Length: 628
Image 1 (cartoon, one colour):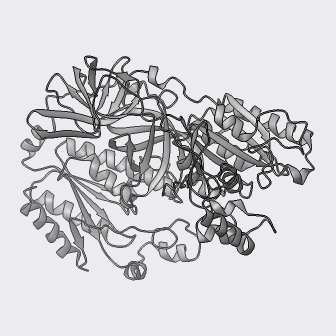
Image 2 (cartoon, rainbow, N blue to C red; image 1 turned 180 degrees about the vertical axis):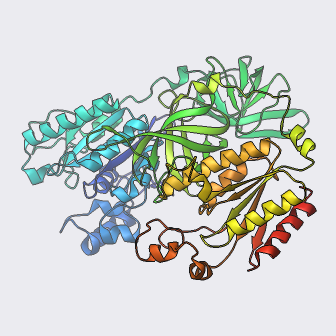
Image 3 (cartoon, helix red, strand yellow; image 1 turned 135 degrees about the vertical axis):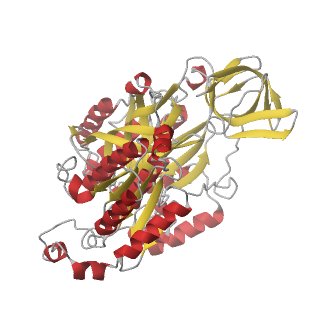
């Protein structure tokens, strides 16, 4: 997203900007064609923020691409993408800057289409206030509720409800009142405490900058009156001090500073601080900025802190004072799912919060939020643009806060480790109690002791490939060969496991993910017992195979891709499964109507038609790498 800043000169007017003016960041949201871009364009126009050439372009574009007849189409000032102009909708988030005599403003105009809900959440993530537009003819609809719910989750507590297109309902006061009452009830459910309802005609400017003569029954503030006067300061400076370390600045042996942006609180030289999660303590020796040293720094400032002691801290650690933050590897959170590929419990992601990046698994989807009714629904997956409550398990403890207390340390995104796509945005609710109660029990007889007794290096041989590729045949030969060599092994065959521990699982994507999670845990236990575990499993998803690899220590996971082509597997078809799948009798069959994601860099790739040759290749690999 590109931040576009309007130049403050020109025939249309000049507004002096002073650094001491407060800045309000707000977001516009609502459904498609409710008038968000028109309202932002009107604010820019009426605040005298347009240059001569911008006005000329607007006039000519309105004649060619406008949707307002002979009038200026103010939405064209914001809808910059060609696709947006052609469709008359906003796709990306458009950032605009404008100012009045009393305040500076940064506005994010967000898309209204449900397909771009992720963009709306992005635009709202840094906003202090939201302007929610509603078409007076349609009232509060599902997308209005979805956006309001996201605003509530994001901690936005100040909302302007702009009931637009009042001219199309003949300026009906009762219609405005009914919409306002419905929205206030919704806002109360979501914890949004400050709602100002204003009837407007964004295209004509009614109740935008000046009160409308066409709606004399409305005696409240205009949109700009409210934006200029609303207090969104909160008490972030009064909260405990938090600074997530972004960089350790060490230009020479005499200077060691911890750089970052203060998320909350106030700090002064001499104040005590602790480094989390280690708990080490020190005091602030100095506060350094590009403009020199400070006697005091507060939330929102980017600073470098020098400490009185040489203590270990690095990127991802958090400098704190006052009440101790949450430090936990198990969290309860709400997520807004962005990705077209559904969220599956048990799948591995990368959680990025502040300056920390940590491996994470969604262990449980507790419920999905029904946008229309706000009810909590039972669900096994989250689809794109859905909201759910989840439990997260992390690879290591995260220093964080509940989102209601700290928006910066209480928010996170989830990233697919394979595609690097951002798949969700999340808000931390609380740490899970069991994270503080459960400790890893140290045992005297561990994996290394058992490995020495068996005179082998334990590992997992993970055979993956299509059905009929020959995985089970080759795994069985390798198992027998290792036993002949006096090695201690255990073979986990996918079909056999479905007769027992996995008998309750089907073949949907989410069931396959759970199948692989269970097999991974069993294989890890076998490795802890000092065994060489052989796993023969289609395991079609790279992300789950990657999860299995990360569950084990380095060098303990050996991926073996039995790369038999689909045509050969189908021609063999020893169980008749491909024939049944082609006939539609077996849904979710890998290779037919469910994809198989081949390994990118398997340790061993089997492309021979001889099972005996494949067996010898694997045994030779184990010898060469000192597993035997």
